[in-house]
Amino acid sequence: MDALIRRAGSPDLDRLVALVAACFEPAWSAASIEGALRAREARAYVAQAVGPGGAPARRVEPRSLGTRPAEIARGESADHVGFVLARRILDAVEIDLVGVAPQARRRGLAIRMLEVLLEAERTRGAALAQLELSSGNEAASALYAGLGFVVVGRRPRYYPDGRDALLLSLELR
Ligand SMILES: CC(C)(COP(=O)(O)OP(=O)(O)OC[C@H]1O[C@@H](n2cnc3c(N)ncnc32)[C@H](O)[C@@H]1OP(=O)(O)O)[C@@H](O)C(=O)NCCC(=O)NCCS
Image 1 (cartoon, rainbow, N blue to C red):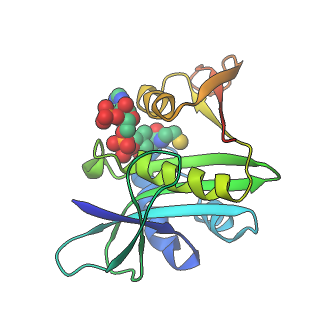
Image 2: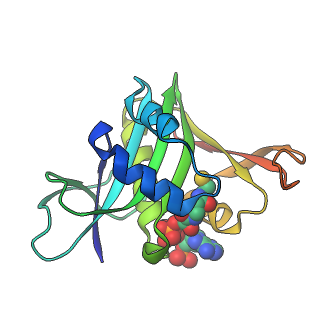
């Protein structure tokens, strides 16, 4: 499956609500997702699966983060299969939510979306990226470790299931 990575906006809301619900239990509300798309500091991306005849893409070579090319779609005809909801707060990129549709996992989509986000924000002067993660989320832990994130803090029994929250950070400069 080929996929295009591009910035997300309000027209993506309905598809994102469905995709977030497929990735998280409990899911974010539609209002929260809309806020994550519309806020001035919002940095949201989607991955769209593209089959034969799908939206054409313009390739953009990456700079320092990662080796896979970033791709930007001009159309919106393909299925939404992944998303990153993040915010730019001063010199930090706060990564709030990352998800990939179950049928599209382990194909490098999450890493590609994050590389596109981090490279774009590094170019715009961001110094670090940070996020919070459940200690029980092994897939996400491996994903972020592969990108170079390190654990910089822990909130014991932070989540309702008793898991700790891990605070992860990545220097971008
Ligand atoms: C976590 C998640 C976003 C990963 O998406 P993905 O597109 O499948 O991830 P990628 O294919 O880019 O994987 C990159 C690396 O992450 C790690 N990884 C991803 N899924 C993994 C899993 N299930 N088990 C162990 N490692 C995993 C691997 O190191 C992988 O590299 P590899 O495939 O070469 O071994 C996806 O599983 C998901 O949506 N989970 C539910 C929502 C969630 O927990 N989000 C993260 C917290 S916000």
